[in-house]
Image (cartoon, rainbow, N blue to C red; front, side, top):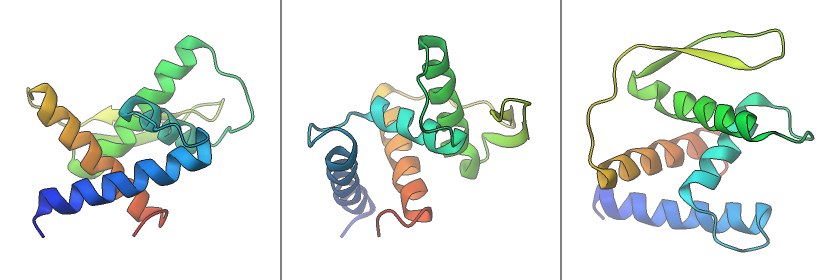
Length: 118
């Protein structure tokens, strides 16, 4: 099986599992999964988030997801427990489809690292 086929299969498994757990089976989209990663990384599960907080959560997730690729590096936690990252390398200009593949690959790797999926 090719790398793309492995990614596609793992992505489908992940989306199905997360959708069952967090959206009553309605398929989660990429942005929704990124948001869940942000909440996971912040670790403050039982609070309501304002719109700006939600954008910050997605930023945290993107930094964490792309950290293994060398684009970001964890820096510190602030007094409210929010993680901060430093940009190590500017992301290359990617077409939308390439961005989607990079993020899906990073998300699958993240959930495999967390042993949520195989």
